[in-house]
Image (tube, rainbow, N blue to C red; front, side, top):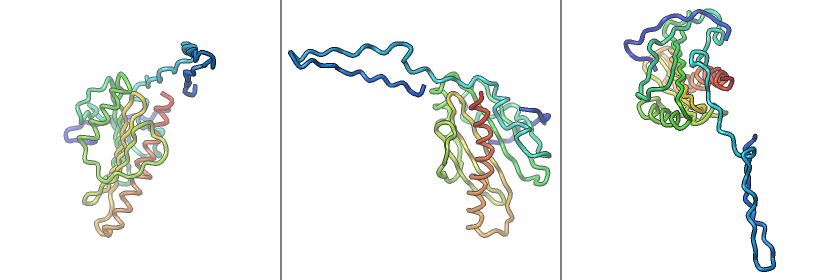
Length: 212
């Protein structure tokens, strides 16, 4: 979510039970209608708390090894917090293409102390942004995934925002298009940019989150 005044610095390339459901069954004796409660579930059978993402956000965003040779990554300094959610830690990078100066992709990950805090942060983020038309999001990107496509004069924007446990991640991709394109073609380009470029980066980040 680029904003005026952001400072970027270049990144050097780098190598980057089942739910246990215990049913309380009442075992009834027919004589006298006497019932006994099933034993309480033991601690061993209790549902484990979900593991939190603990890796540094720096290792969770798009990495130099994730993009084609020649692409350049810049660190967002400081990383944006557009909804004022004050994450425990966060990190962001911007990706530029050498063959298209108007191209820009942004990858940000913020970590919170709990999944509940992260869910509230994502809700706040969705409330402050104008992301365009929301598209169906197929496949799994953590929880609460949202995909958007927007268009402006000369550029289409694909946005993916989602939560994975205590992490909130977003990807924005700004792709230029010729002014001569008809409006219906621009709509197709905007959807393609969202489903291909934006989702492509998001799946890379989700892979890092799953390992983190």
